[in-house]
Image (cartoon, rainbow, N blue to C red; front, side):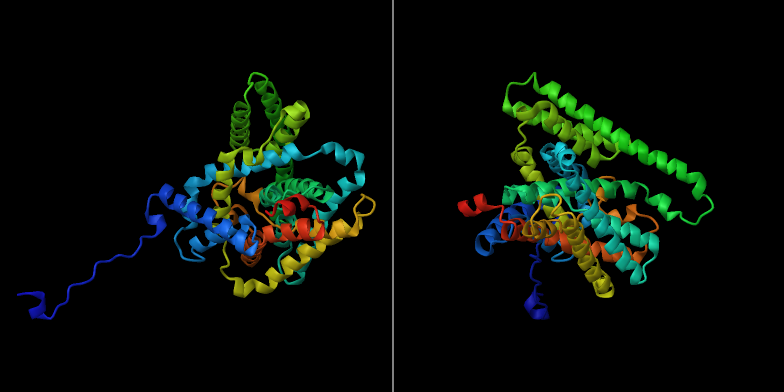
Length: 420
């Protein structure tokens, strides 16, 4: 009998789109990258929204937080490539640092340490006041004190500031990230406070931290020297870029294999290469167009990794973290602003520009992107507040940079003149 005689209507075919994580991983992420570039450019043209924020917004929309097209697990297979994107930006940051400036201006060196210390104390203190365990509050303060080098470097590429606020921003975010990395290396020792085995393990952990610092510094020195030697045999600019990317890959991989700090290694490699090569070292933004594509992938991934789970339970802590971090960094910058040669308007612009918070010090030593798992013993409520705070400050990071460098410090006249 026909379907009509039985009263059974034929079912319409299922034409729903498959989730991107059910497709080939390369195809799915490539599609999101295409959408991100177009959307970010459109938002920048219509709303003056920084392109970096546009990339992260698309990533957030594709994440479980939004449409659920991509999951954080889908990025684990991409971690080596995303680590390379991070490494490229960190090496470029190192090549732009001027350590001699810290010697010539010791008040600046003190300010670089003081702003991170004040932020850590402010965040840790407010968390203890809210009832968080002391070790967890100390760790949260350490992570919150650091400014994300990847957001800062990518933002500097887009805004192109010209002035000492932009230069100090690069120096400070490098130093507070390294200090955060060192404290995180000592976290297992801090977590054992009060245990009987603390005394016997303290020497081991301190020796491990010393090995990380000295080994990373030495590896960075060797990497910068190798790049200097290798470029003498290459008379093509494209060949120099290939050598730089090869060095970044080699140095970051060796640092990870040997248990060193890729962050410190790449910073030292960049500084050493600049010191040895001078004007011969031409570091293009993102190390060329391939690095630019990696950076788009990186910021999309940050958006996918955003989490606001449990925000309704920990929102007082999140607000306290953001406010304490802003006040702490502001106090740290202001205390030594005049002795270090900085005006009050410049100090305010620098404080705002330091607000993009990141987890780079944890990500570069983590096996996957669930970096909270790399901090055993951290109080769950503190961890959740830290994750939500990091997501909020990363997503708004480009806006803080635009406000601080362009609107307050006024160091982006060249970009304004071009209408970018």
